[in-house]
Image 1 (cartoon, rainbow, N blue to C red):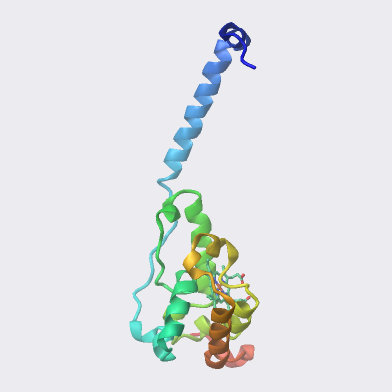
Image 2: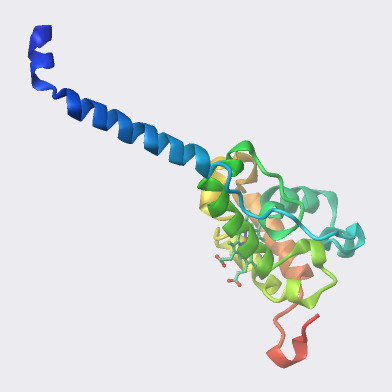
Length: 172
Ligand code: HEC
């Protein structure tokens, strides 16, 4: 039911309306200023010869799957979509990327630190833990179907380094 116009106007307090508007402007200004704060996205220079897919001479179908589903977070070859520049999304995404690279970095496959957790790659893929859900919600192309999961997991299991003892691993 629609009340006559007066009924609405009578109920509003002009000072309060001005206050509300002010608060809205302040919030808007905060959101705008926040956009100038961006996480560090720089990467060190990389030698393509040290790339995991190059070093393992991975076949084309594996390359496509791994680059499409893992490289944004587990290598220095990250493609940043537009929303990854929007605060606070940017910090949240960069956190995932930094954490992913720290665990396993396909761009530095010559370094043992990059491979420490790689023995779990097959299992992570098989169990659907990787790529992480929040990523595949947005990146439809990174969603793996059952047969892609199998292909990828089998290849990882055959080609990733096996788990090593802490003292044998050594740091780079
Ligand atoms: C959106 C970013 C993202 C994508 C894409 C992604 N990962 Fe990860 N990955 C992470 C993060 C963050 C961690 C560390 C936290 C964790 O273990 O859940 C991680 C951890 C891992 C680990 C270490 C697990 C452990 O606990 O030691 C493996 C192995 C791994 N990922 C494999 C993969 C593989 C294989 C793919 C592609 C099929 C992939 N990830 C795709 C972000 C990602």
